[in-house]
Length: 217
Length: 150
Image (cartoon, rainbow over all chains, first blue to last red; front, side):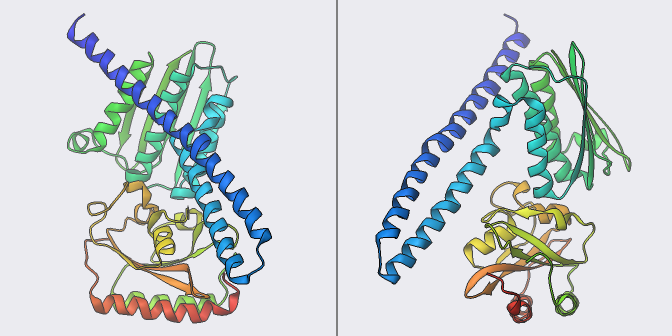
């Protein structure tokens, strides 16, 4: 095997192993820790209902509230790590759900459109596309200085195309080489290449940045 | 609390604070009535209206951390001196802030709000600055006290 082929295989293996580990932690949090907390909460509520001393009742109530808050945190963290919608409902619902969280986190509005009929994509590929979109949107929040993003998904029989345009300040390729942002872009490109797809980025100062992702179906 | 009542009084306190400290941005966040999430209700010196849509989780972001800990917090050179991810600080990104100082606001003895002052340059807020923010937070607590927060 030549050097470049072996390098690609290693890259693919690392990314896949990382995704599997993230999924494992996410499920462990949701199914394991989350379920245990739920059992503790049910038990504490039962104890609370049987206690008459005001002081202990209040204390228990505070504890149940803290557990409820922790359960919410665990649920959100688990979804943040690995979106369950991606497996159960598919790529488009997972992106829609992420965009909701994105707007409420960064205040950036995302106009999403999808044309054509959504096709089934194997999990390994849909997670790659999802992660690339996630990275693109995170970069927009960090660097683009914009309040609006346009995201278009176009489904055909043989290909899924996604365009993300940010209407932001844009950048010059030469500046990118010195920027840590460049590593993120290289990773996005690498991820898409491993799926057999592509990721192209173009930018104009003062006009915005466009990210085009394509995935053969 | 959906909208801030006594807005003109809030505005007056915040504008005075902005002038005294010489900062570019002042904002006020409050914990939602339902659930633990925190939202920015007021801003002055803002570059855009992103703050209106930002909701931070309890314990996350500058506002969420302050409400969960009940302690003040200072960032001197964002994003260089932070613990965690850059994206954990949405108000700093949205307003291009480089430094900030924020204090908790207490209602019924519980931290339920945050007053933040920020600059778009590297800056260390002096003890005098910190005291001024603290005094303004106390004043705002008084103004908002009658609005059944908490």
